[in-house]
Image 1: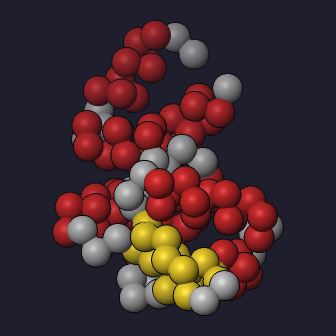
Image 2 (image 1 turned 180 degrees about the vertical axis):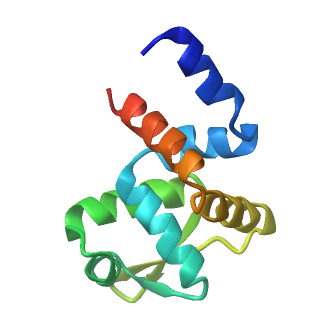
Image 3 (image 1 turned 90 degrees about the horizontal axis):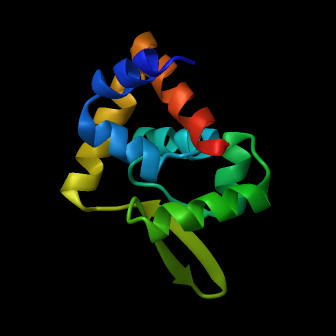
Length: 122
């Protein structure tokens, strides 16, 4: 891909959303998890149940949930011998999640976001 196109893809994206994408939503599973918690903001559940809802592998989902919790997007809590995850109650985090999911409704944004995720996987 030529540098002009790469530059345009970076320049045309909201800087906060670009950083969120590059540092926190850096996989397609995390993107699915962000959308899941946006659509179910009061959910507190185990990795196994969240994986089932998302139609994903439980072990992979657990690893991604742990990373999102370490990054402050989610909160990880212990309930007895279970670990459960919920969306951070931080208003700034919730606003960023909302803006990301709403921006994802736009095809152009999705194309750019997909490019950034694939580029980050290399």
